[in-house]
Image (cartoon, rainbow, N blue to C red; front, side, top):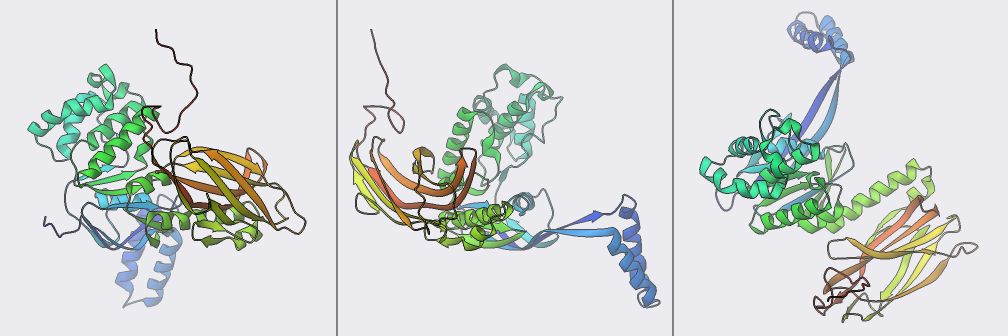
Length: 423
């Protein structure tokens, strides 16, 4: 593997699945097609009827078509798209689990694929035995397995069950052990498909920290997930798949904004709100329309402010809402650097005859730990807390940075009032 060689090269990859009208069609269709081929020059009419009969008994589903991209060593690419867009199929082809119908894939280096975690475990063997076997399958020799096994077992944290048969494990325990194996084999390429949802919240945090550690070592990452914050946190590039085709590539923020626009346009159409769906359009910081949108905003008189711990933040916004929106609400959120929502408010907006803009002012003290924080706004039609339709979503235009290191005052991102006594 040369230093200049890309980690992954995908060229013209397509995947077509054939579905059958009945079990017997699996046998009859290939025979009919062979017969049509043999009779083509002798009895073209009969050959045409055989082909037509075969087409009626078999249908094709094209999961992927014309996929082209290159991923350099050390790069991190996030793939987003609706269910059924072909994301998992693409990962399985790159990992070598599936063969493409067309095109080719070139991979340089050892792959660790977090796809269907635990599917390769032998239920009759113990967890420890499965660790050894899976690590060997992934290319580790016995010396490296012996050097890594204690770290793998400690990371999985399933206690004495490590020496019990895997068939006695809960599904969560098996997933944790499988994840631990994959992220400790020092892969050149890490492929992740929705695998960060394993275990409880503490294990998920540990899993994300481990992936951060792997990436810092120069591993190439191919990541698929509905957790868009994880895509932003881990990936330097992103790709949007729709119906098996690449419709956009670029920076994660740009691709995610387009994905959210398309997702919410479809949600509005499904909810019978075709007018709002047609009006929806991309903005520089999200999406909105003449029906609902934050049209002007500032934070301490600018778009970005730097403050000390506890410094005052004054946000001013102009929000346009059409009078066709029966229950207009502005949802105001403060996000950390990875997009995790820290706090926020639901603000009912006044309805104005004929529509128009209303002014919204929000002030708070920046009692957060040192770091950069972003503001996200969503204009929604919300007749109730459990029935909310998003009409506009904008994020990232407003931000602030807290420059003071306040770890001596509290741990975490922000303080919570506590009564502390030590005797």
